[in-house]
Image (cartoon, rainbow, N blue to C red; front, top):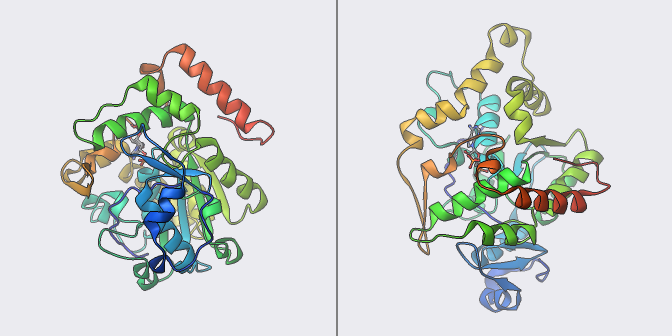
Amino acid sequence: MACIPSKSEAETATNGPPPEDVSSRNLEDLIRTLPTREGWSQPMVLYKNYWCRPHLVGKIMLLQDTFKPRSDDIILATQPKCGTTWLKALAFTITNRSRYSFSDHPLLTSNPQYLVPFIEIPDAGRDHTYLETLPSPRLLSTHLPLSMLPSETSSTGCRIVYLCREPKDAFVSRWHFENKIVKGSSIELEKAFDMFCEGFSPSGPFWDHCLEYWKESLARQDEVLFLKYEEIKSQPEQVVRQLAKFLGVPLTAEEESAGVAQEVVKLCSFENLTSLQVNQTGGVDHGNKIYVENSVFFRKGKVGDWANHMSEEMAEKLDRVIEEKLKGSGLSF
Ligand code: A3P
């Protein structure tokens, strides 16, 4: 697997014009036609039914025009704050386990975010052609909803692992993150909560993003694996085995006896990753007053932390919204 730094949090959002030559288009004019809303750390636009930072629109269009999925690609899809960093660490470790020993591993010196590039934002200073230079099989990631991936992604049969998270925990994690990445900014919890419940959040509406991948995972079980953060928390070794099998590199009997599943879990654990210097220092300046420290991808790493921030009324309200939005889908939290 390729090991590449990608230093951006990609976040997404519709109903723009069909893909065409982005360079020849006056992107600013296009962005001005999209519904815009403020409230999070940066204004966002509604592009193809999802909210995203305006600067992403051009990148998404470019991706739709230029990204050539390969049949052996693996795409890790998430909404921000649902465990992207953890999933990247796990998938990278599982798929590269014949290359790296646990004691001398890239995760010991690189933040997991930068070991698996986002397809919509390959890396600061790199354009989308960079993805073409990566050897197969590529391990890639995205915050884009399924409907925004190039259509060939389904027809080529590349595998997608989608990770979602209990919405109240995802919301609380988001709120903390927003307040950390923009210096001097502070968003009131209640205000953020109302926006989230209205479907206005980076990459949101939260439920639509989940539902797209959920339905696809039911329709294409061999190619789309749907996971929940809480499942990994409660049965990490089981999930490592499940992921390895799904990704075409099942754990062998020898690996089982050698405790490889346990080693993977330990290497990628919150405790281990947060103890590493690489995840405690440094960061990336995204401009626009946004500075993303390496440490910002790690906070508590717990299930149920929402209870320390949200009132019972808030919890009940979000539960009701989610129940209503997911009704009849078979997906629940
Ligand atoms: P909290 O803010 O609830 O602690 P993302 O990677 O999608 O941005 O998600 C970040 C969330 O995942 C944060 O949640 C972070 O602490 C948690 N996280 C990051 N690495 C983790 C790990 N190795 N194990 C468990 N949770 C992890």
